[in-house]
Length: 451
Image 1 (tube, rainbow, N blue to C red):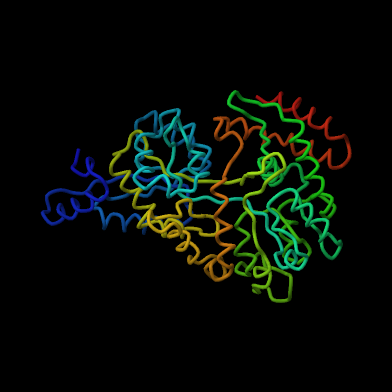
Image 2: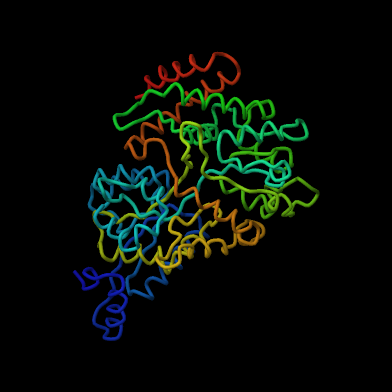
């Protein structure tokens, strides 16, 4: 075991310099698995790792792993005692890997604590909570957005649409088809997009089909509120089988007051992607629509006034086979001196879950806003959207949530979403096939068949 395995990052940097001066030993080498395998993203991670090596003397082998293969690769490597030192992984692996022993929870928690628990967005960190420790160091994430025409809201004197009630009020004021639809809500039941939006809407009202013991009975009152709200936004939408494509097209054409979408729409709104240009005017590169747009991340229902945000978060973890201290040092560097490079991989979809550097509460948020986004053209988000919109974009990570995460039932929740049962029954309710009470009862009946 080398000296570097026994010391903190700060000490490691000094020790590595001393070793280099004396020529006494080679630096440690650690392995890093990442699901960011696209060539340009991989190159940025390799550059960040090289900077870490220069600073610490610890070499890093960056190994791309397809996200679809991550689970099986990790299981096989764990069985063989050949896990990498650091893994970058999606939310769905955090708690199962902690329970299985793939992740060294103590070492991973040490990294969180060294960086400072209070420097992370609470929701992203809490989703990795594991028996008083953490099953991952939150790296980046994104929250689903309520995207809305702030110019129309301001002109009508409407409050920002951060609650069921405010959205309903905006629909009543702005819905004027065919020139303007109040909303474009997904109705295509076999599309994952509807599942994602519906989970967001249900979370916002405190409704979940799982609890600590597994399946949970849906509360009739709160679920009825969800059904009635969803019917309102569907009734304010165009007819047809709607999913992400139509919602983006309608909003880009200036024919929708509100939609729900991922943050990957942000660069497109500003005319930075030729494959999805705004069509609100004759200039496909115009920033007009972006200038008239604001977003909401945390949405509240009447039974959950604190609200919730639907989030996708990614984590770093120290594996159970790791050179723990070197792995922790790499994670700390990636989340501090190298954090801007980490976020620059795809800033429009990598919100900073660590916004404070321990001194400046918005240090990394400010740096992120200056990172260029776009495909065919580049521009920083901070040049496109005002500071209050930038802050709103990232704020949802404080209330980030997903069905089954805190309850340890993420696998069951995924089966529920993949079954499309809720999509189908909500659509039938919206279409008038049955009433709310009967629909809630049928939801509970059908959910009870999922194993």
